Image 1 (cartoon, rainbow over the protein chains, first blue to last red):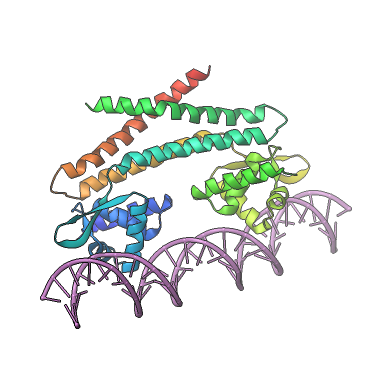
Image 2: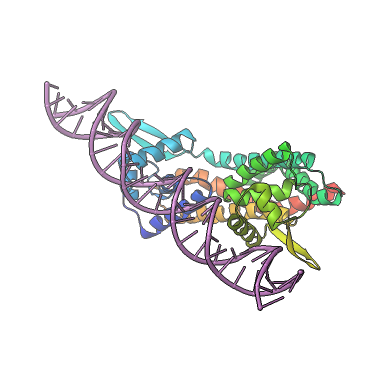
Length: 153
Length: 153
DNA sequence: TCATTAGTTCATAATTTACAGAACCAAAAT
DNA sequence: ATTTTGGTTCTGTAAATTATGAACTAATGA
């Protein structure tokens, strides 16, 4: 498990990106490693070593990622080790989650409009616009995905 | 500046939402307050009082939000106070930023493909799919926004 | 049966964050 | 001239986060 300079710095960059998405540093690095390394699957010890993190940090990170469905593992007969890899189906889930987030925001903002009482309707106009936009995006998303699939064939 | 129970709990809920978007708790609450309160603009002291946060926390939060372009203020002749409000243009910027994020992710993942060398091309297929999808979304976004605008008229 | 492997769990240390409180400052009011 | 207003900046710290290392465990192997 040797990594080039490029790979190491890409792991860091991806790590920081995922920290901004709310992952713990070590967890984000493990994702980065599994994404960037040449081999599609790595063992517990390889991960721990490659990132120079303790066994407990490795254990914590892997279980975190297993629980949230970001990684999975396979085993091989006569080999007690688990081989961890990024769950590739998760890419589409990533996008679905972003859309769910927008959907939640939309309902939140609708409740804001219900609760606050501004004296002039003009104060609500922009917010109404944005809500309408969010809802439009949400509605159009399935057909967009469909279009993309067609465009690939 | 009195707030109903509903308003207070909605400020909290919006606050938690924005904490998940990487804002500090107090900063997120200030956004929530300016969004949810009946009056479209509030002063420094009103914000500090309504949220029961110190002057320093208020100052920090307001400057944070001013710098990131999330709020703005007006003043009135003969009144030294500043009146802070949510920058309404920022709703569209919010969405643009989400798209920029996807765009950054796409380039990051392309670099991953450049850097890692997996022995079988099948290992790159899913990632290529996702990149293609992200790029498709980015490309379609302007026309989607246009369509939405037409649909409103 | 004893040692090794592949991890997990726990206590705790190190770092980071987020805020309060007090001192401070410049402009305006008295 | 000095007091008040509308903040800002600095220092300390409580709390939360994140990681470590050591002790532990359950399964396998010798």
